[in-house]
Amino acid sequence: MTFEEAYRTYIHGKKIISVGFQQPVKTLLPNGYYAYPAGYFTEFENKYRLIFNGASLEKADIQEAFILDPDGLPVARDTETIYYFNDN
Figure (cartoon, rainbow, N blue to C red):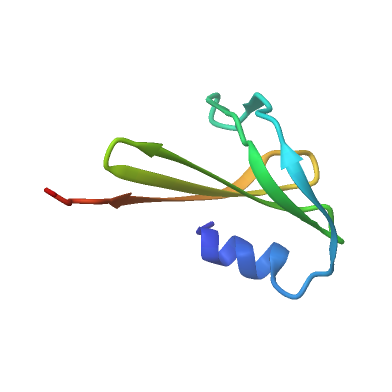
């Protein structure tokens, strides 16, 4: 499922019930790897969370978003890296 499909299925049109910050939580994924979702979240009436975090590494900003199910497992993830090329 793409991030956009997950957003339309689990988030769009749902009522917000809480917001906050989640510390990294080690989460075992179905493929056997681990994810550590952390960041600012919005929780919706169906208990799904939309969570964002970001970091800066030299000339690149990295933004990441997760959609977590009610058990805290990621159902979708999207990342974006913004590169700055300023030679000044």
